[in-house]
Image (cartoon, rainbow, N blue to C red; front, side):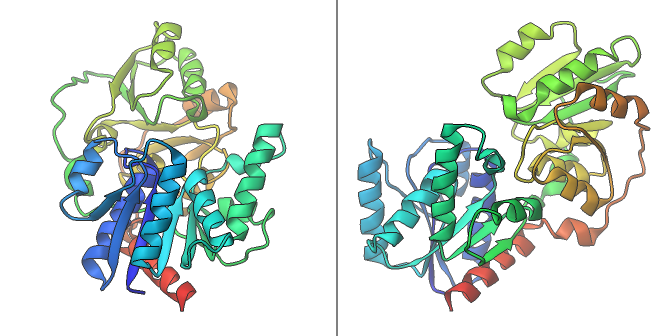
Length: 358
């Protein structure tokens, strides 16, 4: 394998973009491999600026999806990469259709991080999305899933058996340096610090956490830090005015806030794996997570740390909070941490892609 395209819709701060940009950088730096990021639309995000000097990036930047597809097809046929790796439903579908129609002649690999497919049969829209996803998975050369549970659930619907689990590259070389940075914008005095880091969207289940937190207003002296932003921020501020909440927004370094916390909460209704949950594990935090599909239980079991509550159940979460004993001596083995290192994850990508091409 000499040349690899990685096709993404954008380069923002989503887990998929961050994960694959890290993998791209490591592959480019450590293997005799020409890696090109092909991006449908330019956003001028910080991530784009951070990697623009060290990675080969080509933006399609057409005003319409149709013209972006034409540009992508021409680019693939001109540069003839040995493989193209995509992630997220739309890029996955586009590339597999091009391959099925024989408009491109290259190996196609799909990365999947979404557990929405567990809801394929709930309504017409999900059924359509499910059919599209099944088509994509069955017409790729191989598929990469970010958790074993996700892989097992999707394999119930597809006949393509060339599938591999590769975790996200969460642990970077500067991970602990970032976690050790001093917090200058907050002062914690005699409070139990709770934290959650996520997008402020329904999927992430923050309303479940807030409703449970209400039950402890008169029982615990706590502050709840929310790292991240999203469409529900104003709704949460309006609906929960009595809770001791601190909305920090999207911060450059969430790890330093995470390290300061006594309890990390992961209340999602569904996940692919949960990068922030892994970060909390690496830092040895006290963890309360929902048992949602598909990934949290796998992470809790792997690290042997944390407790699970029934997904969507406020009472179950409240019981976990009530019984939580704050520990300061949680240690995590280096061997487990390395499963999520950029180098180990990237090496697995390289070996799997190479073996599937040859």
